[in-house]
Amino acid sequence: MRAQTLDRLPLLPRPRLVRSADGWFRPPATGRGAAEDRAGDVPCDVHADAPGFAAQGYRLTITPERIGLEAGDKAGAFYGRMTLRQLARVAPDGIPCGVIEDRPDIPVRGVMLDISRDKVPTMDTLFMLAGMLSEWKVNHLQLYMEHTFAYSNHRDAWAEASPLTAAEVRALDAYCRERCIELAPNQNSFGHFERWLKHPRYRPLAECPDGFQRPDGSWRAPTTLDPTNPDSIALIAELYAELLSNFTSRRLHIGCDETWELGKGRSRPAVEALGLARVYFDFLAKIKELVAAHGRTGLYWGDMVWNHFADKLDLPDREMLHVDWGYYRRYPYREHGARLAGSGIPFWFAPGTSTWCTLTGCNEAGIGSNRSAAQAGLEWGAGGILNTDWGDFGHWQTLPVSFIGFAAGAAVAWNEGGNPDEAIRAALDPHVFRDAAGAMGAAAYDLADTWMRVSENATAASRLHEILQQGFAFAAPANVTPGTLSAAEAHIEAAIARMRDARMERPDADLIREEFAHNARMAATACRLGRLVLAKDTGAAARARLAPDFEAIVAGHRRVWLARNRPGGLADSLRVLETRLAECRTPG
Image (cartoon, rainbow, N blue to C red; front, side, top):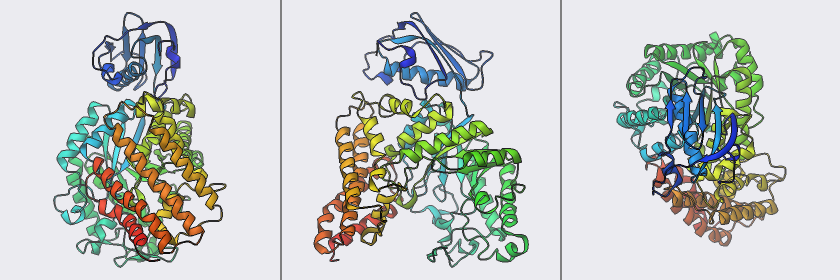
């Protein structure tokens, strides 16, 4: 690395401006070995209240004699230290001289982690993730909750979920504050209440207590609160009173997305009289009063607006934040941003890592949605970017599968124009996987492109996940063939083989290898199962050949799950996989 100039060193995010100069600053030897350990010992003269800096901005000046760090606030000084940490990691024998001047595009650069479907991470996992994100200059973290906080009067809802306790939230909040991350509460407060409404105690609060029929004709258990029942808002008030005291953030994400059965049950008379939009926003107004009483600003998901009320942008409250989610590159962020800005509605955009329901990831959607959101957010004045990582249908993707999406989201929200895809790829080995061999980043990136080989003219990244979900009843689309599935399986095996050459300098290096291998095994088994279905070879003998694969998947899923997560939710996540194993052990 000594031959490289400052402007050519890989950093995450890549800074806005780098000017190289002659010479090197040589960090003192510490005798500790790993470059990331030495990074914390690099001497640096810090001026944290310098005039003339944008919020969160900083300047690093590196000469052969010293390193100077200037910033206008605490956050800027912290981000300068994080850049210096990365410089010491990639140039441990001598940091090239020069000047780095940097500031963010988007003020709030967040990550939202789903801890309700079905994984609740251990505290060690949460601390690790917060530390990693803070180095990449992420400054906002939300843990999406439905039933996974240990509310003192509501054990029925969380008894099997291994929830976060108040003391754990306070500890994480303090840990995040030290790293310039705002830990904000996220408690869904209208829809997605199925984990509550399935219990007799809460069933009277349901919009449709006996469930409802979906557009495809299937029946679903109740998910949405009855907004006309005063006890619904009373429950939400009780939850907020207990939850919010554990967070120092002045924001609260109230969710309120996908209220599918609203107006089909107990609120039908109100909807017929006032209209669906008015009933929906009247309930949000009641929630806003609760939020304001705690001195918070409310955030709500925007899907109900765009799916049902796009012609009624006069109704959303201008004192609440509209969070517009879209998880693919071509989501209409620019169109929505223009309309929201023109209507005076404050907003954030919420792209995603888009790894859920993919097994191995999806760069096109994960990197693409983040880039589109950042471009439109900068154009139309989004106050924040919230990069989401969901866990739908069992939360089968392991955490490292989402690392690329987290890193890309952090990079483009900080400086979209200066962080093209190739810069993100170059940063994966030194700053994400910390692989001295330079193998892991490219292999993980290529593994996340597996979906493109599953289908001719690929249109969906979830196809292998669907095969495992549907099993021998999988109805293959015409563009999924034995040949495409064989190509995908070969691609998976090649990527995993390259990962064996990695020399990661992370304490969880062995676990990361096992996690990727586990998801790769799931994806490869899906390819084999899909070929049997296409060949109409689903009899007892064919199924028996897959039994060892599913035995390994079930055992591996349990093992990698418990390495980073609490046991609650594991049984739910395993249910479909255990069903596939049982099918392989019985006659077709």
